[in-house]
Length: 93
Image (cartoon, rainbow, N blue to C red; front, top):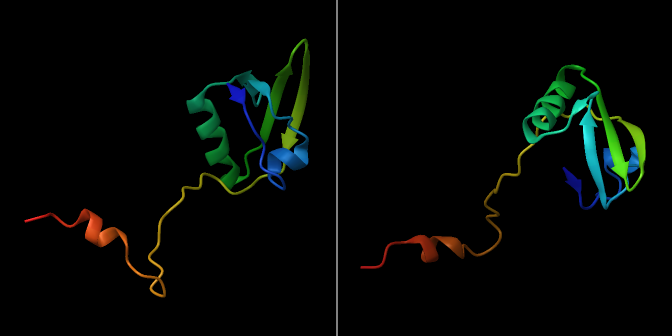
């Protein structure tokens, strides 16, 4: 799994995970999408999050201080701004 970028100030940034590398393992097991989702979800119940990162010929381990579990973005209507989407999605007659 490629680590393309790291958000400044995030748990990965604070742990020193470098962008442009490859995530080789999560909590000591080979990395894949399902394993990453499971490990992140378990942080909400006190689980650890440890990455083994491959950078060219070297491997480094990074322990992330994260306890937020899975989070998903959600759109919310801002009543102080004009509604631009409703006219677009309204069926034309």
